[in-house]
Length: 534
Image 1 (cartoon, rainbow, N blue to C red):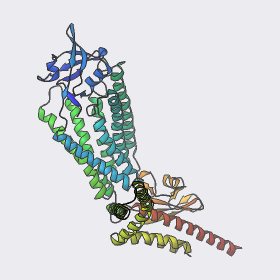
Image 2 (cartoon, rainbow, N blue to C red; image 1 turned 180 degrees about the horizontal axis):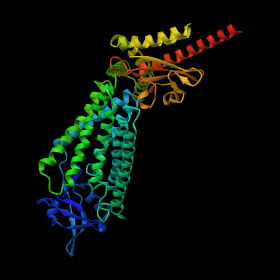
Image 3 (cartoon, rainbow, N blue to C red; image 1 turned 180 degrees about the vertical axis):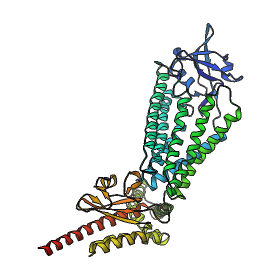
């Protein structure tokens, strides 16, 4: 509602804080103020607000005064931008895409906050959306200081969005090759340089002390097309390198989560190529990349959402279970409160307002303290009615964990552990990498990154985030008496689903129980061997 326009294009000159005017459109504020093509605005003698508005975005109906140079003459000009209708059909499409980004970012953060891939996708979706709204051409308020802070923050989250995406590609096709490490290092350095140069450019415009837009250093990161062109190629190059290093399901997830983002970056690179063409580009060549980019921007969160739900990056069954639980809890709490209010109104209607208020407050407190109990009861009922198989599998894993301490034979316990997890967790394979007391855990050494990470840990470890020799999807520490006695490694599910948090918690319980039982059985065997030798 605050956007304004004056009807021209502005470009830098060889003199600092001297910006030239071009393509003045008739009937708009610039033409009405007498501005002509080739006029020079002397921003050294402009106020902070006037200088900032001219180089970023106009505020509608705000009168700004400038010193304008025309040849050897100069004059004082007052501009009053007209309201710019910003809510076009393209804006609504972009807003729907941003809404989708928020929805899927919320879904990812809720469902798998401990998974690195989920964290990076969530952060990328949020940062990409914020970048659109905090850009110099996308944010304007009546308070220029707030605008300056928003633009500085927008540049930071924009570069972070690219960094999150490049970091996301590094989770695929591990261990990383030297080439991919070099590409990532170069990308992060270039993003850091872009951030510092952009901040310096905005700060120079705001303070009026130095100019990185006009003047000898006018080829800044904001206006020189070569630097953004190179930056826009970082994501496609990183994605292609990861694609070449992956196979099967991993490649499928990578493609679905990054395809639209590659299109967006290639579109931006095409725009920068058009800027450096020696002759004006046809309108079709300008409009086509914009249209493709808008469509890709709209589709990005939905493509990621499809990968989340259909390509099994996240587990839709767990999501539906939790949605049903929270809906049931809400219905019960609201229903009880409504019933209580009705009873109070019917039975205690003649009492004073203070008494009714006190009773209502007591009712709210009772319901508040009862939410946890209601939640557990609703979850138990829904598990048994609608998610019986999931519930039975989880309970089977927990029951086996409780019975592991009674095992009398180590080899039988290992075999039963594998069978239980292959049957009830649907794991494609299960490996127990037990420590041998001489620095080896199964086929890997104690210095393996996964073994090091599992020490002192009481949660699942995503093996795709490490350059490890352990083969599998997740590893669970088997800890006894504070020491890592082994690692329980699970392959991917045969169904292609991911491991749900409640399921993973049950597997963690099993790993700790089996680890303790195997340690005791091994100690008993050592004692028996010692006695037999004695």
